[in-house]
Length: 221
Image 1: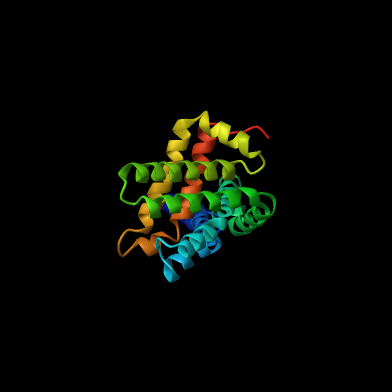
Image 2 (image 1 turned 90 degrees about the horizontal axis):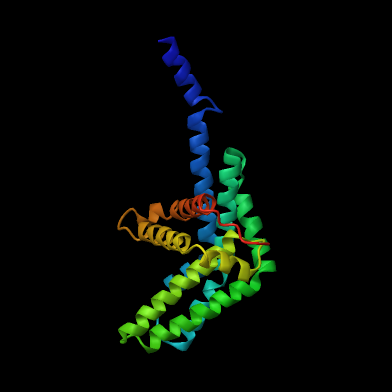
């Protein structure tokens, strides 16, 4: 009985396993909420304007995606801190520090992402009745997502090096796409999707960083 009592006390102690688990869940929550806040222009566009095959709507959508690449970089940086420092990660602070740094130093990547989103949107608007073009647009969106994750996973590496490292590991790029699709699918589940949205971006970032470490994604600096 004393052994069970000792184990129970160790479990619920302020530095016990349960406390570490709860802090880890909180860190994931902070990363997810920070990601949603950083990408708020996309959500505001969806709520206020919505998809429309017009020049203004397409331009507004492309502009709203400018913060996506820095937000992905911030989420991956915060996830890396969680994996390295656990309860002492300060994931929210790590996210916003990396997000701000990416906006300043890698604004060309953010602008390029918005420009490609603009082009793909016009493809959908002009050729929505052509299955082949829609498939190519979907493939282009997947490649754009891989490029954003690759650059976000290696914020200190130049863009060509990050893309080259991703191209050399196509199985890793497919894992990124699968994890992103799962995270998005969780957010659109009826009834519970809104609640899962508060955790899925952080969990996706953690999963991507675990895959990166397991499969040795280390672009040259």
